[in-house]
Image 1 (cartoon, rainbow, N blue to C red):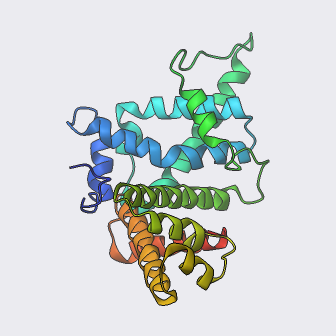
Image 2: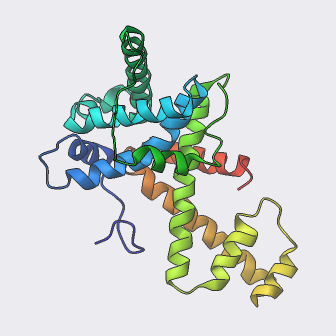
Length: 249
């Protein structure tokens, strides 16, 4: 069953998926590693940019960081009892970049390594980061910015999943209500939107409430991959939803 489908259950807990991504010999390793990469590269890239790395350097460091982790040691060393996975990754990435800087200073000819020649990953990463503010100058609190970027990425995936579900169901009214009302930074009048969608005012509010709940469910579904403890899961979900509201979404 496709884990992104409408009727899929919650993903497995963080412990099992991280363990699978940390074991290149496991049958589900590739899918687990790809999900890990997809979840974390955008906020990690933004963190590098905000803490002094130019765009190409950030791409080089991040590619090398993930390639180095393919053998399983990066994730295998994470201890869930000592903190969140993303906090651990941020620390590892900062240390990885410091080592890269030391290697650069020690290289007499100043040449840069080829990293992933012909792979195309740098172009993909750079393109995906455009328009997200990832190229902002160094932030006063880069760790807080990282948390915000991570939450925004997760929220964006939740929105995209709900939009795709509505599209597959042929629910044009739901798609329009989501974009024009639920996610609108500035909402038009309720009567105006209801009339345009062929709904009563009360039906509009009921459907909007259901769409908001569906978004919260999508957020929680993704967070269950990262956090299995109910209390911490609720805190993480509420933090993502709060940040989405603060961002005008």
